[in-house]
Image 1 (tube, rainbow, N blue to C red):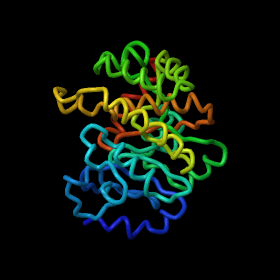
Image 2 (tube, rainbow, N blue to C red):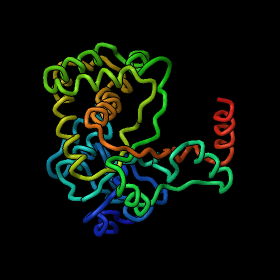
Image 3 (cartoon, one colour):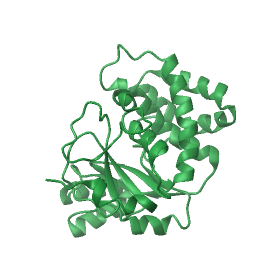
Image 4 (cartoon, helix red, strand yellow):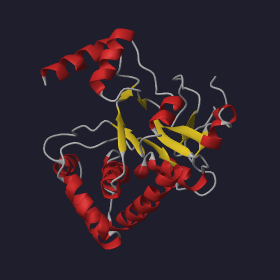
Length: 271
């Protein structure tokens, strides 16, 4: 049985916390200061008493289309940490700046662990944001990648909303759309003040995009539209703000083992 994380991490919530988004109970060992937050808590069972996303001011009911963003919204409106981050129940930042180094370390050690809050705190002394190492999400640029997997009109609507509600950000949006790589997964670590400024902008844009898009006939995967959009929009916000960023390699707990790391490391050597 997993312990009550809200009780165990009450001291960590005062200053700095990495919140781990989940929709179900899990037993992956977490470092001190990592706190699970249950998203879609209106419907999902919470036997281990994780922090639910339906307490206080929240948008928990939007979870099917907003994904981990219902957790992010809860953090914005309810958390009181000085430094704050978002991870996933099976996807974490490592302490390594590149996947190549992470794979090599996994080959040598046989495993990798989530980066400690102590390490994150050290990194934050010289940077504004920690994001996942950029990668390419398919063929072409970011705009083409999105259009290859999702409804192109939804991205066009998002650009239109930005042009109306946040015109100063439009240039950054267009620049990011022409890149080949971005940071995915809506994962980050930053100060609460930086996160608050981002959320103020992000949800203003997404709530308006939601009014102008119709996802009723989308399948369950495509209905996660606003989560997909926000993966791109985090990069847009960072570009617009021109803040300093440190990148860390992320990993999936159900993928990364020594054999997987060997295969991936060989591929990186070839490329």
